[in-house]
Image 1 (cartoon, rainbow, N blue to C red):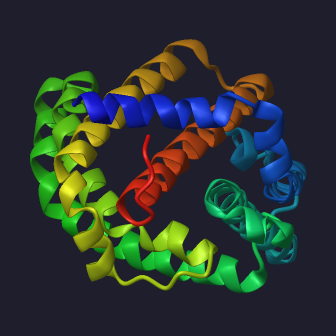
Image 2: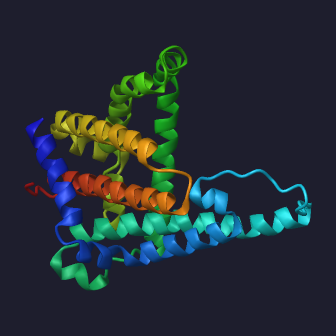
Length: 257
């Protein structure tokens, strides 16, 4: 567990130690995210902020109006997805690119973005299929004992799924620096770190649970709360990406923490 704590602390430090450098490395992805969020907020404020409102009975809800909104919502959501991938991929590149290749820049190319997206979708499908049988008992606990107890009960299941995800997901940072890696190669490379990765997943599951409890207690349905939630989720994503980057550096490149 000590190595797990060291990797987690190192990942957090990587993001916040020189936060201006973090922003400079990921600013293109963040800009795309901001534009997509702005479009989504203008078109459908409820989607952007998480707030729901009743429809105005005097507002025209014809098919044409709905089609027009969808025509803007779809590219906005696409920008959010692309911006998120660009941010994470740029962060991988910022940390992993050797000095003789840093002139290439950190903003990923379209090929890297598409490769990262395809690998992420494939990983997501596998994890969802594995999650279905695992979370049946959690659903039963939620029905009988409430969401808070179910949240505690879900922590080991989330840790198991996260462990599987991280064992396979070295293919993600690998593709951002031009290193083609298979699922099997990722699994084999992380074998010496299997126990460490499980410890990391427990840490992340607990942190995520605490953050969700805090968000439910503090945040409300308004724009400021929505902005805080978005910023918090992006920082959490960067820390998670830093953990994955660190694991890649240790398992593949032989780096120290």
